[in-house]
Length: 343
Image 1 (cartoon, one colour):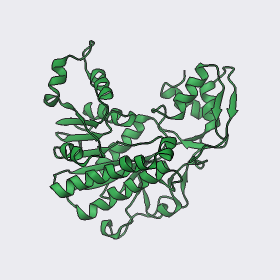
Image 2: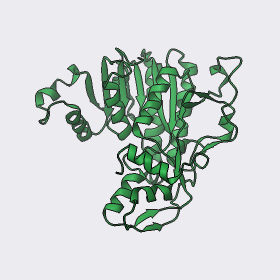
Image 3: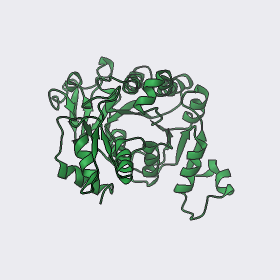
Image 4: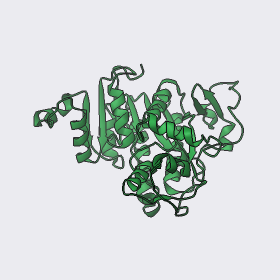
């Protein structure tokens, strides 16, 4: 019950992942928090979220909005890029979950400086705020991605730096636990391939597939949230939690979504910055990786953060790649039905 009576700050709390994190935390399944603070720079999304989470059937009233700071769920406008904004939000938090990110690969390729500002400087501002102001934050959880492992695009590179900033922060601030989670493609999240395929199918096709042999890890947004909760419960300082997840070829994913409808598939070729296969644990990281229940855990490489003299043996040799975790087409279709993405 790690969240019980805690103040939880979720940066990027109006995004796909951040929003679901907020909803799940507010159920009290991991202990009812004293307060959940949604921190983002988009007032429209904050208003939409406030309305959606309200139990009222009508639009939320001005009275509800103006009592923002009296509610268990609190909204704050701000930007992780601005140190002053971060200080204002972090000062009241027991737990910080950093879900703020620029995560669209093409956007980051065209505007790498913007990706650095959000994905790297954002987490650096959180660390700096805690260190310089001696805020009593218990845990910071950095949300990362499979693209951070052996990165070939700006999005992955900046997320890899985010991991390193968070992990190294444990050394100079031992009173706060800095940890991370790394997971693959979240099915039906904003900007992912499934909504694109469904839109193309609804128009009658064609469905555009990059390469038939391309593979991706598949998990639901709730499974991603479960990973954050597992890390909050069990991660030691500097550890990265990774879910053990199935994967699919992009072609099988397209076929599962199309079903028996007469929709063509066009192969359009790999896009700039794309990998053919995603990797969640590299061969080099595998030496420091152990299994804990349904998760792989990458132990920190920095010797100052190693606490056990006789660590568990590595969970596997080689790398943990989407190419190695493939499930057949019927199982892909069953996963999509389970999560109500197809009938």
